[in-house]
Amino acid sequence: MTEITRVALDAMGGDNAPAEIVKGAIDAVNKRKDIKVLLVGQEEVVKKELAQYTYDKGQVEVINATEVIETAEPPVLAIRKKKDSSIVVALNLVKKGEADAFVSAGSSGAILVGGQLIAGRIKGVERPPLAPLIPTAKGVSLLIDCGANVDARPSHLVQFAKMGSIYMENIVGIKNPKVAIVNIGAEEEKGNALVKETFPLLKECEDINFVGSIEARNIPQGDADVIVCEAFVGNVILKLYEGLASVLVKEIKQGMLSSLRSKIGALLVKPALKNTMKRFDTSEHGGAPLLGLNGLVVKTHGSSKAIEVSNSIIQCVTFKEQKISDKIRERIQIKEDKEE
Image (spheres, rainbow, N blue to C red):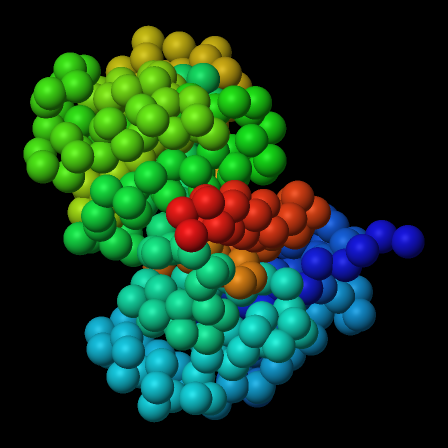
């Protein structure tokens, strides 16, 4: 009998909620029979959206949550005061074991705070990082951290490298993934104080395949599988990545429609170009997991459409099957026990 993965989905979070969130949930359950989505949000609103779809009623459940945490609200205050918000209610489902994962396109700050306060960190994990998959010429790389810890310490980055290696090996299937730290040059003596202090620590790690520094221009080439940095740098890389991709797609489309000859050429290359563009679409790779928690928390873009929501839900199945949290717990716990 197939084991069901239960995903608590924040139906009220994001710029396109609840319409695109509900559509993404339906797309996911219609693709996979091993998923049950717990749609958490204002019941009447969610059910109104659901009414327009055909789906297996046993795979979707609506759980009422009367409040919504807005993006501009102070995260800590919002999590403490809005106990009946979709984020808090959904995270409590994970905490109580009634859901295997939580997915949201809502307030990043509230999700990060709520994930740590409600789901809780794995013992030994100093800081949970956000880790999205980004497209490269060789497939995908994991960017860790991209938004959770802007003032990270060297010990945090070492843990990011270990957690990222576990994720890439078990979720993406890359054996002995190459780990690199973001730097302004390849030389070991380059970088700011954080990078200079972290580099030798990563070099000494026997349980990761550390290959040294990586410059930003080499990230799209896929020169490393796990890209380690603190959240300020990671977020800048991610946003530039997404912005540049958007501009390139727009410029290519305009160029192809600029003359009769280019239009004819566009018709010939359209199938191949469409496949290439799809590979470099970040929405194809789901959301960013917040690694190192007692349970899976996935943050998707605030502007997520149904496709990204659906892919984020589906990625939770592999995370559960591969027992990523248990493997992180085991790796970090062993290190902690040795130090004691």
